[in-house]
Amino acid sequence: MPPALFALALASFGIGTGEFVIMGILPQIAHDLGATIPQAGSLVSAYAMTVTFAGPFVAVLAARLPQKAALLGLLSLFLFGNLFCALAPGFSFLFLARIFTALAHAAFYGNGVVVAAGLVPPHRRTQAIALMFSGMTLANIIGVPAGTLIGVAYGWRATFWTITPFLAIAWIALAVFLKPSRQERSAGGFFREFVVLRRPQVLLTLIASVFVSASLFIILTYIAPLLSNVTHMDEAQISSALLLFGAGTFVGTFLGGRLADWRQTTTIVGAFLALAVVYVLFAFADHSIPTAFVTMFFLGAISFANGPGMQARVIDKAHEAPNIGASLIHSSYNFGNGAGAWLGGGAIAAGLGYADLPWLSMVLIIVALMTIGIAHAQDQAAKNMSLPKLESDAPSQQDRAA
Image (spheres, rainbow, N blue to C red):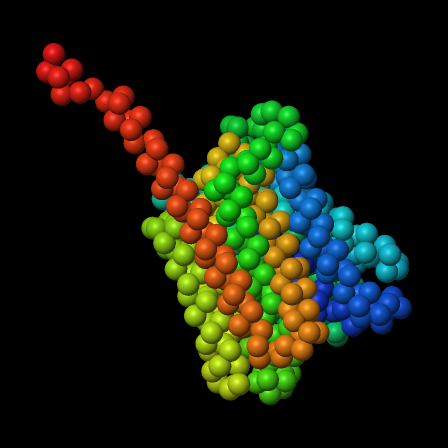
């Protein structure tokens, strides 16, 4: 794999840590800045909604720049946003700094996925995408726990200061190792790239990504109280369970990348089916500590195994505007994250127990499976429609004889 890919993975590690670590230091932020926990929680939702709704527009603007300049500019945006968070004098400033930082998220991943896929031969591109996203999974395994410990020990600002060197090193590595692309600019007007949303295969893939992400975050958002109240784990055991989940995401991302290069649709459908099984098993396994540990690993592995294939599918179906397609799937994932948290919270408020959340997740993953099935059927229909044309263009036996 080219060195530029590892630079993208390091940038992904820094961005992923910066996105998720704030959930571990919310109490410190609230106490230091005189805010309530719900107010501090708005930092998470503000980030996610900015990624969802502003990210695609930033991606279109970035697509009009040379790829290398776009990636360096977007990474600079995140780096400075991270510094603004560390220097925030008050809660309002921190809130705006998080929004500023989130502007770069979807666009960086959208451009980065396209660049990563172009750095390797076609038969290895999904593995390249998986390598880039290994930084995100390592952020869940190493970055978030370490950043939380630093924030608890030395203050929440120290967490943001610690993330900054990783982003700076990634910026330098990209500047050194990433070669300028021959395709320097995106053609057409600003809104022209959004025409890809009229393509059913693109839209259905994005809808499926919303449902699969929401199904995971119904459980993941409330995993700590679930493991505490249902499984009866203590804090150390919950941390270990989350570490197993993070390890599973790392394994699943690489395995999904290799399998998707072999059979893309088969891998996606298989991952969705396996995730439905895991949700059913979790509904029973969460009553026992040993089985809950095992299930947490497989929950992380299988829920992330579909990611590289879904990314590659969007690039395929939005081939004339791959940057906006790749950024839109990140927006759809973030929208699913927020929707899953909202649905899970609403279900609990309505009287559903923590132990029942996996059943709700299973319903959503079945919807995702049906959606991707419809998308695949449309793929097959499009191929079948093209066959008569190909046959009519081929010379007949009499023509060849003549």
